[in-house]
Image 1: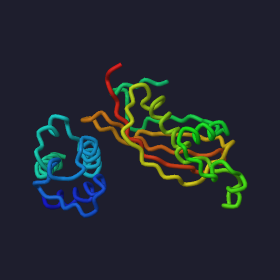
Image 2 (image 1 turned 180 degrees about the horizontal axis):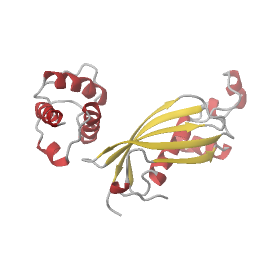
Image 3 (image 1 turned 30 degrees about the horizontal axis):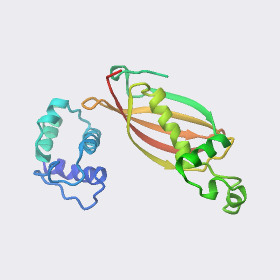
Image 4 (image 1 turned 135 degrees about the vertical axis):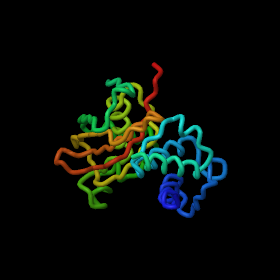
Length: 80
Length: 140
């Protein structure tokens, strides 16, 4: 799980144009600068391509923070 | 104009069109953008800078990426969300440009296509390359 979080961090840094961003399981659109609706689409698209998974819109709408995204990716990778 | 719906699109779909860069386009873009840099208008200035003539505006040639997405791929139902573009080589008036885009990735959740695109001149030289992010809306 830590590996997935570590892999997500450079993606978030690149998409949000913040090379010093420190990503935690508690990170979300409210506490990370620049995480707006368009950035959200960019983040999801980049994560799908990085991990080779696909998210349904319903799955994404349920996510409350990065930690839940990590868990979702982990479940998808386990099923692959 | 193409009118692909989201369900029509597949990764690997491609489109190419050709366009000739004209002096009229250059003057129209200068008026539109307000970019009066002499590199784009003064042949002598451009030659002193090491070019054979005035250099086409990078954003003028890149505007053909807008045509690619908005008219052809996906076409009518496109909503352009972003473009990353690199200007690799200069283009000049009279160049016959070939604009090509290929769908590299489709995001099902947000109905967004990522299109890898290039512009080449008539000699086959790469002028620019781009990653286009285009949403596909459902309403007429």
